[in-house]
Amino acid sequence: MLDRAGAPLVTRTLTDPRPAADELLIRVRACGVCRTDLHIRDGELPRASTPVVPGHQIAGEVVARGAGATRFDLGARVGVTWLASTCGRCAWCLSGRENLCPDARFTGCDRDGGFAELTVAREAFCHALPDAYDDVRVAPLLCAGAIGYRALRLAGDAANVGLYGFGSSAHLVAQVAAARGQRVFAFTRAGDESAQRAARDLGAEWAGASTDGAPRPLEAAIIFAPVGELVPLALRAVAPGGVVVCAGIHMSDIPSFPYALLWEERQVRSVANVTRADVTALLRHAGEHPLRVLAEAMPLDRAEEALERIRSGRVAGSLVLVP
Image (cartoon, rainbow, N blue to C red; front, side, top):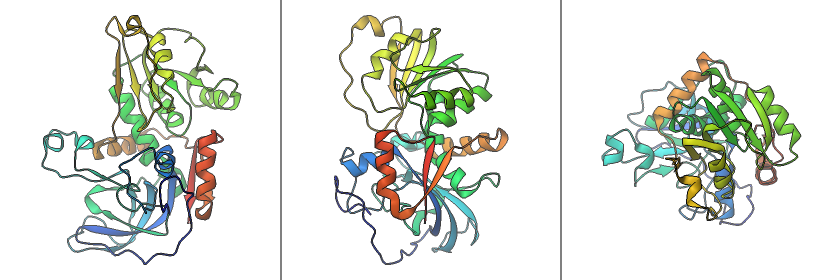
């Protein structure tokens, strides 16, 4: 549990939650650890409410249902994601852009999440999980996979795609892009040979340091690392008409750069959250094109250690907490 921003996570015994109308009570079987959890812990997302139980990549089992919750049977495997609820009435919701709803609430940020044994979630925002993936391997698909999938879609029909930062999201989206016939080029921290080997093993045609020039012009670049200095580097790597997609919820300031880098109709755009349709599409793709999910299970009481490993970059793929 996070008592206040900037404080370490603590283990605490809470009263078991109870599902309200249209909600599910879920026994958490696994919960992926996301860099967003680290941003919340460090106070870099001011909207986060505290105290709060973090965690929004939840794979679990339905153990009770509130009034009106009939979509999932007791015992069903369900996934819970970052998007916890929306208003359903605003212009964004009505146009398929619920990720931009001004009244959206988010799991592990505005309401308690999955770094726990039990959690509750709106049934309409839960997802059926594919049988081909166990709980530990399916959890990272619910955010790392989904946000990468959305970023790849916003990058357009690019033949050559650069991925800056090769961690939880990139190791999944590299496989999605390769399955679509796109050529993947991975950019990592200088000297991170293990990440570069992993990138090549998972479908990247080339892997090198972020400061290296791309071996060929890119039509699109997706930045997963929360480092603003990568934006000018990525702009230099994309061809005229190319797009740079910033996929993180938080990023350090982007330094000034000459207009010449943006000229020739290059674009810089962000990804804000995901929709339920994004998650459904990614899970469908994962069922049709099996993904290698690099996931390391850790006990729930080592959540703070998991966040520190993400901070230092000492992760190959995803970390997943198991109660």
